[in-house]
Amino acid sequence: MHINDAVFLEDLCPKFRFRQWRKSIHKFTGKSCIYCGKPSESIDHVIPRSQGGLSKTENCVPACLSCNGDKSDENALYWYRRQKFYDPRRAMAIRAWLEGDLRLALRLLQWANPNFKVKNKNYIKDESEYKAA
Ligand SMILES: [Zn+2]
Image (tube, rainbow, N blue to C red):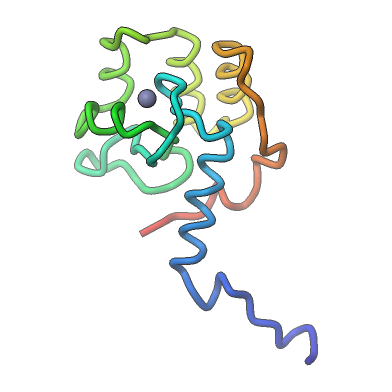
């Protein structure tokens, strides 16, 4: 088969690509909730979809089910400020993430939690441009 005939699975199956994208979001933080640091089990929209938030990397953060459910339809930055586990460094990280500066966001998260390990070194990739449905 000629190399140009290669069909990529992602092109054939957008759902597969979406799954990969979700996985990459969790990888950024080593599968820990951006708000409280517990294991992340879901993807949360910092700006809720109901308020025009988009499903792209800048607006989607790894979150545990309890944070995601509790936050519900609120803007994450306002919600987070009222939480018991509020940490200004994490708040800055969320803001940086929202602005698309994942590098800075991960550095701030690392500062907030010394045990935090950056597992995905190639975090600034074209995936960040990928928009999900
Ligand atoms: Zn959480």
